Image (cartoon, rainbow, N blue to C red; front, side, top):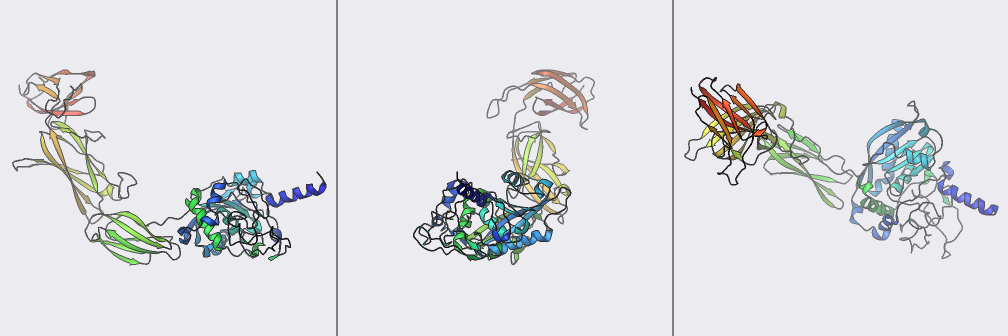
Length: 562
């Protein structure tokens, strides 16, 4: 290989991969290693999407690189200025940036010395956020996006507070250099071909943007100094202020409408970029007592919001800009608050379920002292009752609401007599997640009632009910009853239920008096189907016999008479 060829090879490699040097002749290290698919989708010929008229707000996350002893690095005010510069350069494109947060990486290796591909890759893997574009602020003059498109870039030195940051952000958002193809660059991305001065191949060559003229990358300051001609013999006339060119940083001033189109389409086509978008939301309490204020924060410029609530008579709404004050009209309950946001490409509705006072509750009947709901209830059997607050926003089926710990839960059981003489059983007052127990004494229809008093919301009260059908199945025979000496317990099948039940085992029995004091307890290893209890030492009285079948307890009244 002759010396001239060697020189040209070294020079080209330096142009592609060199670390950015002085501002008078700067380079960025970004190369395209993406598959052709995204590049083809984002060619100018396919960017006539209505999405380009929709303003987009993007989260960015700053990583300030400092020495291991926590010194050095950009100051807080410099980082804020960098963000201001970004927003200024992209404001005309309907793109704005909002800071998600910042971290400090204290590492001498990252702070000192130059950057190669390995060191860069290690850096942009550190504390990388998946829902923001990560900006790593380093010490040396260096500028590189992780890919085209990407959600990470590194910039430092004299470039950080110039529009070079907007150049690298352009790569993250899907833009190529304006001289791509005319000047062959590295990377494993789509094939590069020179763009013609007349722009006829601008959709398939160069930077894939028709309104950025072909650019041979020959600059003297902000003035084009090239004299060569394109394949048609036409003279080049590139833009001397485009942010994606290699003019000096002081000349990087604008992006074209075609680049705007490509950016918006790149975001639509890239999952990693979609994850960085700030999605409109409703900010405010999930639950309140009297009034509450809600906002739709981080709206882009030109976006407006109107508010509504369903049911419409649930509350009155007082609006001011993107803010609304909700004053309930119907007392406690749940409603859907809607923010309708008007954008350049239509409207978007954002919903939030809100609760006034006490949320909706679901009443469950559980196995006695258990956690599993039962679908069938039987007479003379103990059960527990629970009430769960239903998550108004549907994140989880149930949740612990704000005022739960101070609320009072008043439980009752009503036996609905078909002849009109209902019997009411007052179970008492309990706390949230305290489950009362009850044994249905006979078959029939019952109603469980729950009154919840919210002691923190001016004693608001809500009532909930659930009907329960109790079937007449004992599961065991107990004889003799009344008894004077011995009681025999035998498993029995259920011949009165819809389905015949197999005989239950007897694994444990308890005999308790009316005060709930257990007077006799006996366990049966492995389970039996017949058991005998001696009761000749117990005084005359009414007792509760409880039988455990291995899964649940069954209760029977037993009268002892000597």
